[in-house]
Amino acid sequence: MTNIDYDKIIEESCNNVKSKLVPIKVELEFVDFNVDIIKNELGTEKVSELVERAEGIIVETDADARNAVSTALSARKLGKEISKLRKEITEPALSFQKRAIAVEKEYISQLENVESGLFEKVEVYQTQRRESLEASGITDYSFENLKTDLGSCSTRSYFEFKIVDESLVPREYFKLDSVKLNEDIKNGIREIPGLEIQEIFKKQYRLSGKK
Image (cartoon, rainbow, N blue to C red; front, side):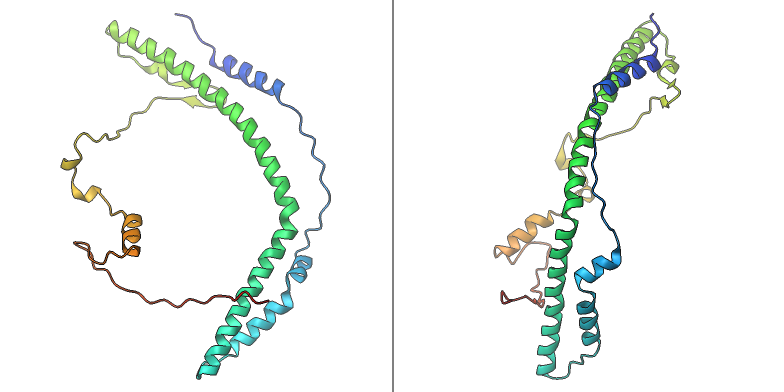
């Protein structure tokens, strides 16, 4: 039986892929990543002012409650403005990152194909050899454990399930479909055997469309 030089196969395949890779020319514009500058842009003073105002609010009357809600929604509005400005500041960097990730994925995909293709060839060979040995009454599978300078290859066993009769599967292995339940309750169903459906009240605070 012909001996296979796995290290040589892997090395030749990697070199083949490497020879096809196009060098990436990256031109980066210097960016000042001074966080203090960013803080000033995002409105540090406004945030501090709102925090201080909120700490001093005591709710004991309807007017106090109205003032607390107004201040809280002011904080939410400022937060949205800060998030919008942050996106404007970081967009150039994120755009470059997306392009870099796209290139990375392309190359990784090629290399993963190399890996899976070679592993498949090894498995086909080892399966054929195992079957040949078993036909001869030999049960020595040590040849399946391989070691190279970069790592190793070994065979392990594990168990997995396949449903043959769902009606016989113990109930403990099933779980409620919460998505369907919530959808049915939303659509008006109020009685489901085994469940208690309660009406829950929760406050909602919304910003108006006014500037």
